[in-house]
Image 1: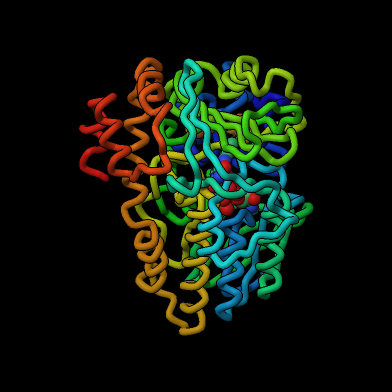
Image 2: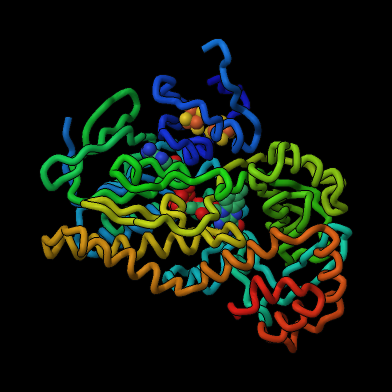
Length: 57
Length: 394
Ligand SMILES: Cc1cc2nc3c(=O)[nH]c(=O)nc-3n(C[C@H](O)[C@H](O)[C@H](O)COP(=O)(O)OP(=O)(O)OC[C@H]3O[C@@H](n4cnc5c(N)ncnc54)[C@H](O)[C@@H]3O)c2cc1C
Ligand code: SF4
Ligand code: SF4
């Protein structure tokens, strides 16, 4: 997952992640890419469109 | 390193600080942790609360964290038709004061500390496991990793709600039940009435609404929430369009941007499991119609704090005992959240044209002399489907 620079670490994406794989630090997001099921709920709910699926992976 | 405590509260928002305060008041050893370097900042809130709500929680308003007092509510339909409501006449949730959340949240945490809770800021909970009849939470602070062993863990971690999930509760919020919120704090806002909360409805905020909450002088929170399932644009794009088109914000300048999710699907099914309780946004304790969660979350914190403190002092930490908290929260809310959910369903079913015609019909209504029953009766005249969606409720 690509986290763009304008992410504000609000945690909304983590709240909808059915796999519970997003860790929201005060100024950082960590994804457990292994467990991600690619549902893109996180991308969809972000109020500022800060997430992009990394299609390379 | 292992730290031991009776009660560990994860998250020092209004719900967590209230829980920590009351657990400590009731005699428990309490640790309150938050990942933030400054409790309350950044704010993720339009900062509206009802006076009655604060009073019920036993909190006296302080000039340090109340920015403005509200008298009226101004509702605006898509074509700009305005309906005024007076706060004294029609009881409205979340109307009363506009707070300074950054200061308020800090003060609530200070109250928890004064009651005896220990606070650890810049401390992130990373995971949780059960060991015997206790819970071990792994945490990280300033480069150090350590465990906290607690008899009871209260998850007050807001819309992320991961603590509950670590403990096996189902707290995932579906995108259709999660408002995406974005807001500017603005200056040079030109309001018709500086003492009114303003709400704007219709396709400008699909699945939600836009708001202007005044903070005194020419300052206001200007924001909106949308349901991500109802729009292809981001909440931010909707807000830029709103600010551009709204007469009140023509000359306004943003000094702050806030974003955040609001769980509006109603409370989660279970708020309690073995040795773990969840409170506030984490438990979906948010008014599903308005998205207001300060008071209902703090109410959750109050009950969870009291119940956990009493369970500790009686040394009876069973699931049944902790479930008293959940029961009390539901009793306190009564069926109000069910009504708000229905009212929201109805509101979201209305087209821009329907909203305009309802606003037009209500424009001249003297709300001073009208009760809720009559209001619904009038509503049904202009919008027959209100009967179907709301008739049985009120
Ligand atoms: C744009 C917007 C406008 C709103 N407007 C209003 C309004 O006008 N009126 C109203 O009543 N409500 C409003 N709300 C809702 C209100 O902000 C929330 O209901 C309220 O903040 C919930 O309080 P809480 O204590 O449950 O959670 P929060 O205030 O979200 O606090 C949770 C805390 O937990 C911490 N945390 C999370 N995870 C961890 C972890 N793993 N480890 C350590 N700490 C952690 C966070 O840093 C945070 O401080 C609004 C929300 C939004 C997004
Ligand atoms: S929802 Fe968007 S802004 Fe909020 S933490 Fe996730 S990526 Fe960042
Ligand atoms: S794509 Fe789905 S599973 Fe993967 S991180 Fe996003 S919400 Fe979670």
